[in-house]
Amino acid sequence: MSLEPIFLWMNRLPLSEYIRESAYVSPVNNLVHLLSMVTFIGALALVDLRLLNTGMRQQPLKQVAQAALPWLVGGFLGLLVTGFIALTGTAMAQYTNRVFWLKMYILLAAMIFTATVRHKVTMADEARVGPLWSMLVGFISLALWTSVAVAARMIMFLR
Amino acid sequence: MTTLHNLFEWLEALPTATALRESDYGYPYLLAGHVVGMLFFAGLILMMDLRLAGLAHVETRVSQIQKRLFPWQMLSLVLSFVTGGLLFYMQPLQYWGKVFFWTKFVMMGLAGANAIVFHLTTYRSVARWDNDPVPPFRARLAGILSIVLWAAVVVFGRLTAYDWLTYQ
Image 1 (tube, rainbow over the protein chains, first blue to last red):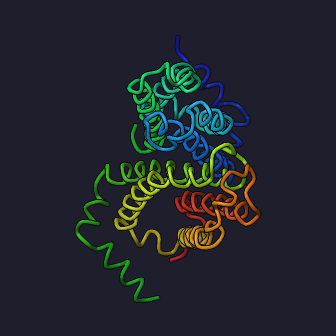
Image 2 (cartoon, rainbow over the protein chains, first blue to last red):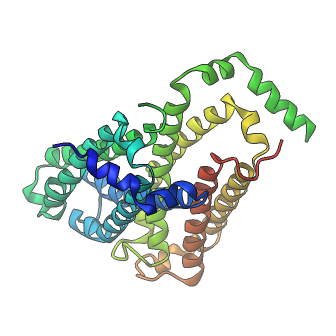
Image 3 (cartoon, each protein chain N blue to C red):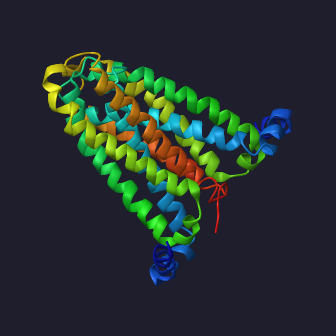
């Protein structure tokens, strides 16, 4: 199954044309995307550093993770909404860009990992998860999300 | 002003700056590094400021957040500085006439001053309000100011990429 019809359809939307023709929608949208990213990465790194047994080590993992969760989810929602707006304006340019798809595959892996393994480990009783497993989860999480950001930044340079 | 402009011209003409400029990958890789450094720096600063403002992590002592996040904030700041410095070094004249570029550094100066003033004044008495879910007004003010100023640094940094308000 090809996703091309969906991207073609997005590209033809009046909203897509409006985004392309406006000098301000894309830059402002991009700024909100970036600030959402800062919030998301802050909330993510705070907990991942704790998983790596550094950072806020004296607090229970679950307490740190629960306090960070609203900011992690809020940042993610901001990224999702502004990401879709950006995609609507440039649908076909993204569709034909290999780095865009690389970002999407890493993003998919990062989302699944965060919602399953990482969520389980951060909300579990700490004694039940070995320190090495915690470190591994923190490391994989940081590596995956950093790769998403790097791949995203590369989209307009590489094809 | 002319001397500063001369310095920019001199930098731009250096062989290593020219080499970086002519490399296909120099700019994208440096930019990616700059974004990653910025994300971790601003993200962890934001988490600390939210605690100061009494908006998040209220069960954790303020001094804990300050102390435990500091090395990571500094590490990512170094990454941002090195990559940012090289991005500037490879094409200084590109930035000379950009109002947003200079505004970014003004904002950075204000954000730094805010942090220093806070540490030299309000933070000295942290032992008295370390456990308070909502810290005293001056601490909350420093936290909110820090969020606004660092966000402005990010915003003006990003806006530097456009050719708005660019003079030669």
